[in-house]
Image (tube, rainbow, N blue to C red; front, side, top):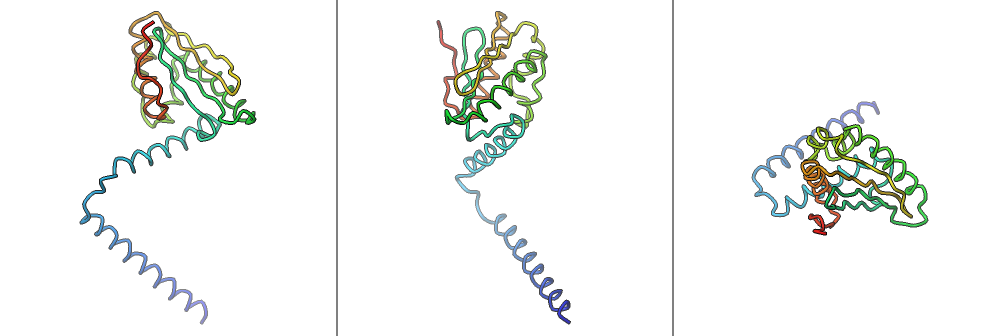
Length: 181
């Protein structure tokens, strides 16, 4: 008898949930769009990107800071642990960036494609001109950087396109133009 009561209660709860879901869907259809929708979408996209970044890079995106710097002949990808005592993040950053330098030199951009859930601008040309671009890893006090250099103007333009995309996606606030010197 007790099981019958639980079953009936479960059916009632499920029915109410179905009705509530249907009413919610109808309300959303008749409600004008939220003026903050682009911000909500952007925040959701950033959270999803950070989650994929945590998975792909092996360290917390919120415990670290990314910078993407443009230079006349390429640029750099820099990542550092926010806390100087966070040696675990520092070491994970260094391992990741060493790996990135090797992958990018081979024309493999699978990690940024996974993190951003798309092919970042510049990647097709960077793959095509991979032999004209060098990638060098360097350690920093709290992480590391990958220096990207090329003398090829098409490759440099592709690297800049890639780095600008990263600046915008990661909301780093880094300059979108290379210094003129």
